[in-house]
Image 1: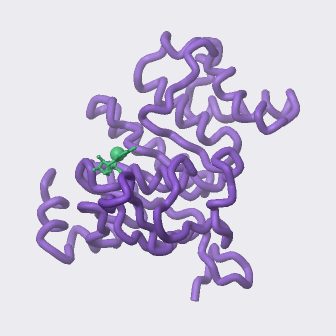
Image 2: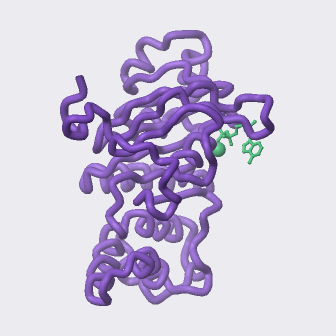
Length: 250
Ligand code: ADP
Ligand code: MG
């Protein structure tokens, strides 16, 4: 059934969302039965208008929110038993800021220190992460002394420095201007492919999703309208919502 990237005999994909539902108030479902299998190395985008439930899905994957119904599996195991810091997931959230009192290097070393790596290993990995986002000359600066784009590069480096198998990004480029946003789209995509890391990426920007993704889940009102490759979405939208939403910026 599942071939490449599946987990041994379990037949489970790397990530499985199984009928995942979420209500914050005990009445209204804001995620209504999300189903998706993700293989290792895929770049998956959750695309949809504001309020459609994208961030809620990421928060449940990260462990900051619990599903009301359903189950999320990572490597074949239900993740609900794992606290957030044990999930081995790299995060780049809009409100997940850098530590202002730490230099860039210290920000990058932090996720490694909490994992008890040796000093020499930490130095090596921090250097590699800085190289990856082309900030080798900025290691001693504090975040306030970096441009918005540079700060976002540090956030990306910090999410990757401990070599997670899975990275979650929630509108990571939302605050950047158009040129920088396009540059960073290619940079993030390049790094993701280079490392072979699995990505779940959230955006409301159609062209961003079409550029970066292997597959896209189009959300509206807590429901996936279509789950498809960029080409399929563009050429064969399954309903009026998808056709209109995908067409908006083109
Ligand atoms: P998106 O990321 O697509 O904009 P969200 O997942 O943030 O969507 O929100 C989906 C719905 O859930 C929205 O109606 C939003 O107001 C609501 N919501 C999100 N977070 C919370 C929360 N912590 N408490 C209550 N309602 C929330
Ligand atoms: Mg959101």
